[in-house]
Image (cartoon, rainbow over all chains, first blue to last red):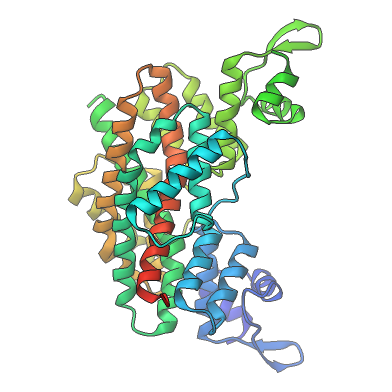
Length: 209
Length: 209
């Protein structure tokens, strides 16, 4: 199909599609004449993935480029691609080097070892977790660390659900894409659910009716 | 204390502090002479909250201004402030109006009614959840809705932990701030934990060792 039809099908404006091609997010179409290219279903699918990561996942174009590069590299084992996707999702926290940061890193190391998680202390998610806990401690909410195991139980349950869902994907190609979708969009899904559960819990406890 | 000392204590540069005052995020200091103001511990604490919401929560300055305005309004009931904080955290999804969006809104309405959650369909979190599910469906991952109850179980567990933590805060002032911290930073904490649990689960399943 021509770029105009690709644009109509996906709702992405033509200049935006061309921008994604320039930035390496979308493979170029097959040239059919000097200034016309032809696109197929793989472009359409990739374009929908890019828009989902942008709109729902809140990722930036450069981050998406990294994830897609990992996704397209056949040499990379599945769990490394998942790791790359997950790392891009994490916020870029400012690095601090104070007593709260040091204490929070210790709390995270204890948690990882207590739960037997196969994850390095240098993992970006572990670093981000420590930074979030340190920020809480700086605000006088260091005791939040006490509910960390309740959070970890819930996180394990979600991770099991994600892996169970991935198991049902047959083609490896679908599975890798499913990981990216699950990691990024699953985060948006869980965040929204948690806020809904908050609305319910606090309406029950503090609400008028 | 003078603005220089406030800057040293919090690590926030003086021009940034002045910017926060201009934008209404931070109350002005008490004028001690024509061009000198004095700040106290409430400024220090508020400044740490702003930085945490910015750095770890990934919120924008305008969003933080909204949340702080709600936090400072004694007329607003606790659960409305929590709601305002939660709404600001959600991503601003592009609004679609296709078959996938309509189906996803139905799935969310069913979920809310099945779980007996006291939340309106118009709640921003419900809207965001529907948009995330619709984005998945557009990518051929509509079956993800099947694991939604596993996610909801986990979200309820996290919400219970959050409310349990808030119960231990004595002063109402602390409690309201605790809600904001818990809603925004708790999201970062859970996101990081989920990614760690993923790293562990996929290393076990797909990893070499």
